[in-house]
Length: 156
Image (cartoon, rainbow, N blue to C red; front, top):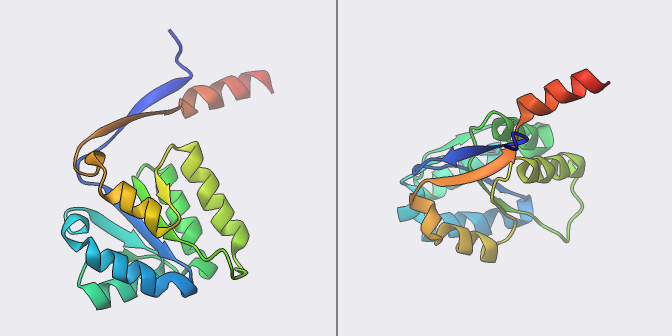
Protein backbone atom coordinates (compact mmCIF):
# COMPACT_ATOMS: atom_id res chain seq x y z
CA UNK A 1 0.00 0.00 0.00
CA UNK A 2 1.43 3.36 -1.07
CA UNK A 3 0.79 5.95 1.62
CA UNK A 4 2.74 8.74 -0.09
CA UNK A 5 -0.55 10.23 -1.36
CA UNK A 6 -3.90 10.91 0.25
CA UNK A 7 -7.34 11.55 -1.20
CA UNK A 8 -9.05 14.83 -0.40
CA UNK A 9 -12.64 15.71 -1.25
CA UNK A 10 -13.73 19.05 -2.66
CA UNK A 11 -17.33 19.50 -1.53
CA UNK A 12 -20.38 20.35 -3.61
CA UNK A 13 -20.22 23.96 -2.47
CA UNK A 14 -16.86 25.25 -3.62
CA UNK A 15 -14.63 27.90 -2.09
CA UNK A 16 -13.74 29.95 -5.17
CA UNK A 17 -11.04 32.63 -5.20
CA UNK A 18 -11.46 35.46 -7.71
CA UNK A 19 -8.39 37.47 -8.70
CA UNK A 20 -7.65 39.87 -11.55
CA UNK A 21 -4.83 42.17 -12.50
CA UNK A 22 -5.88 45.79 -13.06
CA UNK A 23 -6.07 45.41 -16.84
CA UNK A 24 -8.42 42.43 -16.44
CA UNK A 25 -10.77 43.67 -13.69
CA UNK A 26 -13.53 44.72 -16.09
CA UNK A 27 -13.30 41.32 -17.78
CA UNK A 28 -13.62 39.33 -14.54
CA UNK A 29 -16.54 41.50 -13.39
CA UNK A 30 -18.34 40.83 -16.67
CA UNK A 31 -17.50 37.12 -16.39
CA UNK A 32 -18.85 36.96 -12.82
CA UNK A 33 -22.04 38.72 -13.92
CA UNK A 34 -22.49 36.21 -16.77
CA UNK A 35 -22.04 33.27 -14.36
CA UNK A 36 -23.81 34.84 -11.39
CA UNK A 37 -26.33 31.99 -11.07
CA UNK A 38 -23.57 29.39 -10.62
CA UNK A 39 -21.26 31.57 -8.52
CA UNK A 40 -24.08 32.47 -6.13
CA UNK A 41 -24.22 28.81 -5.01
CA UNK A 42 -20.61 28.89 -3.82
CA UNK A 43 -18.48 30.75 -1.27
CA UNK A 44 -16.49 33.49 -2.97
CA UNK A 45 -13.36 35.30 -1.88
CA UNK A 46 -10.74 37.32 -3.64
CA UNK A 47 -8.00 39.86 -3.50
CA UNK A 48 -9.11 43.23 -2.12
CA UNK A 49 -9.86 45.53 -5.04
CA UNK A 50 -11.17 42.75 -7.27
CA UNK A 51 -13.45 41.42 -4.51
CA UNK A 52 -14.87 44.87 -3.79
CA UNK A 53 -15.46 45.67 -7.44
CA UNK A 54 -17.20 42.34 -8.13
CA UNK A 55 -19.48 42.82 -5.11
CA UNK A 56 -20.25 46.43 -6.04
CA UNK A 57 -20.99 45.68 -9.71
CA UNK A 58 -22.72 42.27 -9.48
CA UNK A 59 -24.10 42.05 -5.95
CA UNK A 60 -22.28 38.75 -5.38
CA UNK A 61 -20.87 38.52 -1.85
CA UNK A 62 -17.09 38.21 -2.18
CA UNK A 63 -14.92 38.16 0.93
CA UNK A 64 -11.95 40.40 0.29
CA UNK A 65 -8.39 39.89 1.42
CA UNK A 66 -5.56 42.36 0.81
CA UNK A 67 -4.92 43.56 -2.72
CA UNK A 68 -2.43 41.43 -4.63
CA UNK A 69 0.58 43.76 -4.32
CA UNK A 70 -0.07 44.05 -0.57
CA UNK A 71 -0.03 40.30 0.06
CA UNK A 72 -3.48 39.21 -1.15
CA UNK A 73 -2.07 36.57 -3.50
CA UNK A 74 -0.10 35.14 -0.59
CA UNK A 75 -3.21 35.14 1.61
CA UNK A 76 -5.08 33.17 -1.05
CA UNK A 77 -2.11 30.77 -1.30
CA UNK A 78 -2.19 30.25 2.47
CA UNK A 79 -5.91 29.41 2.24
CA UNK A 80 -5.08 26.81 -0.43
CA UNK A 81 -2.56 25.22 1.94
CA UNK A 82 -5.16 25.25 4.73
CA UNK A 83 -7.69 23.47 2.47
CA UNK A 84 -9.99 26.49 2.33
CA UNK A 85 -9.78 27.22 -1.42
CA UNK A 86 -11.09 24.68 -3.94
CA UNK A 87 -10.82 26.60 -7.21
CA UNK A 88 -9.09 29.78 -8.40
CA UNK A 89 -10.21 32.09 -11.17
CA UNK A 90 -7.31 34.44 -11.90
CA UNK A 91 -7.56 36.73 -14.90
CA UNK A 92 -3.91 37.65 -15.25
CA UNK A 93 -2.55 40.26 -17.61
CA UNK A 94 0.37 38.74 -19.56
CA UNK A 95 1.17 42.03 -21.33
CA UNK A 96 1.78 44.18 -18.25
CA UNK A 97 4.64 43.82 -15.78
CA UNK A 98 3.42 43.17 -12.24
CA UNK A 99 5.42 44.37 -9.21
CA UNK A 100 4.23 41.34 -7.25
CA UNK A 101 5.07 38.77 -9.93
CA UNK A 102 6.94 36.52 -7.44
CA UNK A 103 3.75 36.33 -5.34
CA UNK A 104 1.70 35.39 -8.41
CA UNK A 105 4.18 32.65 -9.31
CA UNK A 106 4.08 31.36 -5.73
CA UNK A 107 0.27 31.19 -5.89
CA UNK A 108 0.36 29.29 -9.19
CA UNK A 109 2.93 26.88 -7.75
CA UNK A 110 0.98 26.19 -4.56
CA UNK A 111 -2.21 25.57 -6.58
CA UNK A 112 -0.27 22.94 -8.54
CA UNK A 113 1.18 21.34 -5.41
CA UNK A 114 -2.30 21.02 -3.88
CA UNK A 115 -3.97 19.98 -7.18
CA UNK A 116 -6.33 22.97 -7.15
CA UNK A 117 -7.96 23.90 -10.48
CA UNK A 118 -6.85 27.36 -11.58
CA UNK A 119 -8.02 29.34 -14.60
CA UNK A 120 -5.83 32.18 -15.74
CA UNK A 121 -8.02 33.37 -18.61
CA UNK A 122 -11.70 33.59 -19.59
CA UNK A 123 -11.72 30.50 -21.81
CA UNK A 124 -10.36 28.26 -19.05
CA UNK A 125 -12.69 29.87 -16.51
CA UNK A 126 -15.64 29.14 -18.82
CA UNK A 127 -14.61 25.49 -19.04
CA UNK A 128 -14.27 25.20 -15.25
CA UNK A 129 -17.52 26.96 -14.34
CA UNK A 130 -19.53 24.85 -16.81
CA UNK A 131 -17.89 21.56 -15.79
CA UNK A 132 -20.15 18.88 -14.32
CA UNK A 133 -17.81 18.91 -11.30
CA UNK A 134 -18.78 22.46 -10.31
CA UNK A 135 -21.85 21.31 -8.36
CA UNK A 136 -20.72 17.91 -7.14
CA UNK A 137 -18.07 16.46 -4.88
CA UNK A 138 -14.69 15.77 -6.41
CA UNK A 139 -11.96 13.52 -5.03
CA UNK A 140 -8.36 14.31 -5.83
CA UNK A 141 -5.03 12.95 -4.67
CA UNK A 142 -2.33 15.08 -3.12
CA UNK A 143 0.98 14.41 -1.45
CA UNK A 144 0.63 12.98 2.06
CA UNK A 145 2.25 16.01 3.67
CA UNK A 146 2.43 14.54 7.18
CA UNK A 147 4.24 11.46 5.88
CA UNK A 148 6.49 13.62 3.72
CA UNK A 149 7.51 15.74 6.73
CA UNK A 150 8.08 12.66 8.87
CA UNK A 151 10.22 11.00 6.20
CA UNK A 152 12.26 14.16 5.58
CA UNK A 153 12.83 14.68 9.32
CA UNK A 154 14.15 11.13 9.62
CA UNK A 155 16.53 11.42 6.68
CA UNK A 156 18.01 14.89 7.20
